[in-house]
Image (cartoon, rainbow, N blue to C red; front, side):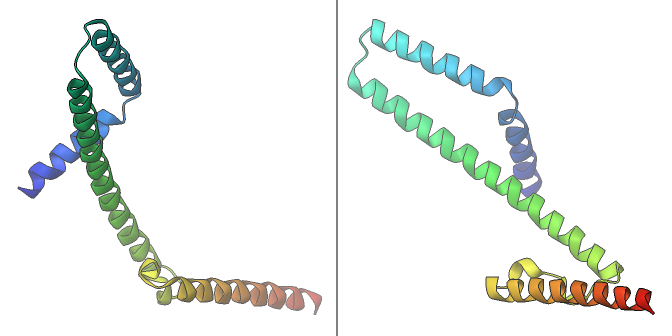
Length: 127
């Protein structure tokens, strides 16, 4: 079941991301409004249209969020593996799961370490 949902999600995300979709939706909305006004559709018809449009928008939003979450998890996993295989400190692994103050402290410490390393290189050049 999961692979079907992933396949449907990927299909909808790629389809809704196509550049022709906004033009088609604007054309559909203008045509729908013109037909409704020319044939004097009752007010309930427009309410039904509004509800259907809201539901479709909500569904597509959920699919896009699912796809983005899956992509971000894969990206974080790749970054963690790069950190593990490099000379970087392992304390950076899963930094996205830490609170804002901890991440800011890590960033400031890294910045201070860079300044110290640059100052050390300059001192070595002077001697």
